[in-house]
Image (cartoon, helix red, strand yellow):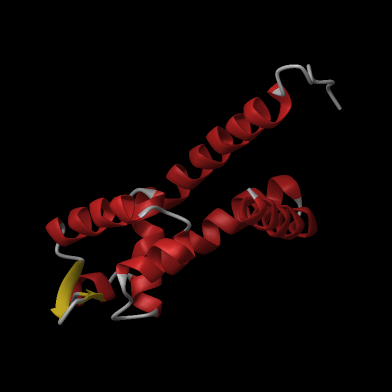
Length: 140
């Protein structure tokens, strides 16, 4: 393992950024058949799994800020894949028929993404890494 200059704590920052860039590259390639970015695709999958989900809950589950969720939803509305409804003070997000028609393709791309990084890292390492990253993210 490479040593780090602890004075500047470069390891965490640069290592996490390098990992993020490599994962992003794999994700973009895996989600390419949908014509959506990975973030848009994951939001679509979430809304398909939980129709009527509120943006706040979607943000919590995807670990994204409310403003990011709003931008993602707006883009998916422009593509006619999602709709928002208001019930009093609550906003709910639903897939449109066009969005529902993408479910099989989205699931296929998700499987492809998992298989891509699992082939590189190994299934056990992949599962452990994701669990560890979630735990560490919650601590920060």
